[in-house]
Length: 296
Image (cartoon, rainbow, N blue to C red; front, top):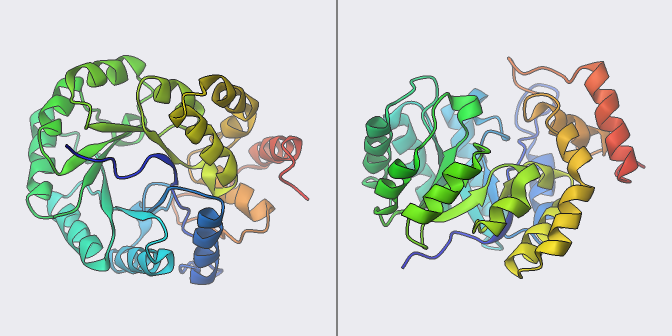
């Protein structure tokens, strides 16, 4: 029987950049240390929030290596390794394994819009070429393609595929997946505004954008769910809904980087074609953060 890569809360780490647009490793290291000090159960590097789509292969590999060394076995490291090029996904996966990562996060191939058969072949090809457990990542709003529950069932038969980060917002898909797949095919919420209802349906935790600025909250919320205290967790989920909404008022990670900069966390700039948050939405974000006591 497979064990989950982690249970609880895992930040989808932002990648801080300096004034020249290079990775700011000092700020990145501090972010990692602060997240671990807050009690997170794992960290995820070079995912969507980490702007992996606009990082070079060399930068991507270096960021994963840095994260693994900085974490130094304190928590699990999940390395984003997804690509719409299957060969590139294998290359990134093998380098993540060589770096000492504990697991891989693989988004569905974007833009290509593979068929369900194509998705199955893509993940089978990758899993045959790495020893690490794989977490699938379903985010159709960004990729243009979604898994079906039947495809999850097929992939759940592969012992190297540990489960899925589900960010479709489709609770029918979640319920059907839980029905069709074995109990050791694990699900994690990919949506900060749906942590509690997803965990009520059996998800094991969250891979969280909001954790970059409120790690203790996301840890508490997910751990209350794991302890079956859904009433307390639901109150926390509702209390932070306005802030979570503000963190997604523009495409991720634009608002969360703005929030981190407001808090003095040196997240830095964004890689084009992403650009700074609008003045209007910055005001919305600032108001919500002030309401939750996040601004000094």
